[in-house]
Image 1 (spheres, rainbow, N blue to C red):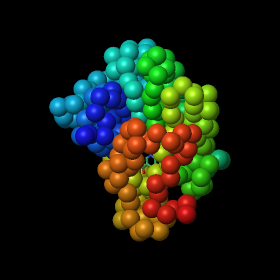
Image 2 (cartoon, rainbow, N blue to C red):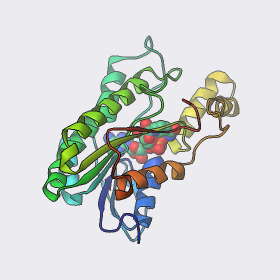
Image 3 (cartoon, helix red, strand yellow):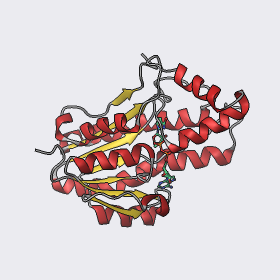
Length: 247
Ligand code: NAD
């Protein structure tokens, strides 16, 4: 039997990276997946019998309400997030506000929209994307990012404890560095400061004792587990998957 047969799933930021890999992995396991992203062009080639795609901007309350109503999900994977570069002294108000809106508040928006339907059906699984760079570990030049991803862990625990007796589970995922289009952008940007793309990549690889970067599929496997009833005894937890970085 497929591990997610009969489940309706909504994924944010599903056009690329971990979101896309997770949408496809959950569809392979028999879920009906609503794969959403703000980027319609990037969604266009996300094709699978069990996947329906549509545009959902997690920063827009109306878009969130409409999208969640359309999906009526049993599983919510809040994957959208953005990485700002810099220290506490570099951070600007605009970056801080943008990051908290996209990385934290948007998850609240999605949960608030999806939870009533889950409660009505007596069950649901919410999976939030945090990071090893959060309250787990500090990473250089990730001041705003690490702060927002620590907030995601707090939000996850709050939601979990309030609905623990109502059949709702809420967990979050804390990856180390993962292959994705936005990681490529960050490597090119850092490369300009440290003498090239290859040197930047070497630095990112070095911080993970396994000596490599994760694939998006490796993270998707954890998303499938947390979405499925196999993980029925875990809630309120940050699930660290970081190649030994924080170990
Ligand atoms: P990515 O950064 O390459 O892609 C992000 C996607 O988010 C894009 O498709 C983009 O269109 C979408 N998006 C941006 N704004 C949006 C909005 N307002 N509404 C809906 N979608 C929006 O993908 P990734 O690197 O796999 O990152 C996905 C998540 O995983 C993020 O939350 C990120 O912080 C987290 N994460 C990534 C890594 C990594 O190394 N790649 C590590 C830990 C955590």
